[in-house]
Image (cartoon, rainbow, N blue to C red; front, top):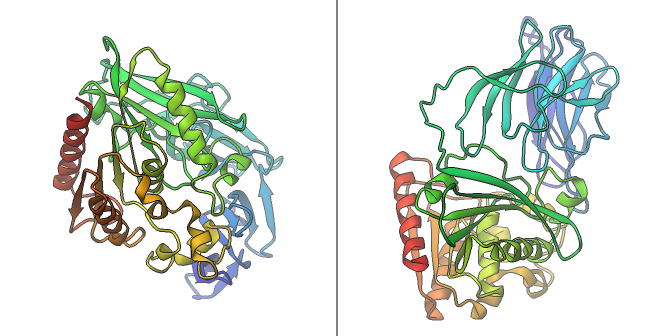
Length: 440
């Protein structure tokens, strides 16, 4: 069973499942539907059904991935755990074919769940008190579940857990050789936004900080996604905490793990609206802390987080500096330069960028650039086709023209992410040096 791609009616890529009989080379397509994706096909042990993660695209309603069974003979579909309002990450089947294991985005964590095939009910396995993120899940022959677990403070390590509720995961070995950072600590906080919704955020800080600390607001990309209590290779808060900074990582509107209506809050041409208000509510709460120096706060983000950093630059002067990575600066113009325009049309709620570009650009940072006064560092990979380098260059020139202190770092051999070890070191060195100059 493999995914089978075809062009969709909305110009995005549809994915069905191709069942290929190796001996006869006969192929049958199941799960096909307009504007629909079926991903991660896993055969049941008896071969009679497939488990997939299935979602249908719409410009008015944000995607809602669901665990779905496909009958391999008839192609009939059956959704499981539909009432479980969370984004699942499919693992594997139990040997008897009665259960599947998955992790799910839940309020900043990614715990383990087991879904019963007969009832379709999802049951949490890892204990509520256990933080962290769990991935690569499989049932063992003895009925336990194995996988990979990490937290903000612990790199990925293999673990096992009993397949019953409230079970603590047991790390098998510390193969990373990483010594637990007792000098850092993580807090899980929540604040009310302007519309009364709860906005969750993490605070990673020096364990024995004295006085008020300079503070960094890190905004995740996506925008659909979640900053989880997990090990992060590219944006690791420990590197900043080791230098005495507090790092705040919020999950504003559009983040998974807080119910589908919360994700819906970013769908459409609304990027600079409630999500921005959520971030300012978090910033207000952080500024009220006794361990935060409100005169030494900065904000930074990548991809959508880069867009939001740009929007912040045009809307407030409360931060001492800003760092924007792989950003979006325009909106209507961006449509024709990204490698993924069909998704962009959906993401913007189906709004026509050509009918009234000025109205379409209501949340485009470039249209409000004259309000930007905060020193900025702009970072971009020259091979970034998702958010092309022109977005960063456009912003840099606009800030230079208006006399805003600004610098630009370009990686000629990188794309949307900085992946090469030497470049990662250069990225961290440049970022931390820039922050130090402005928050000293």
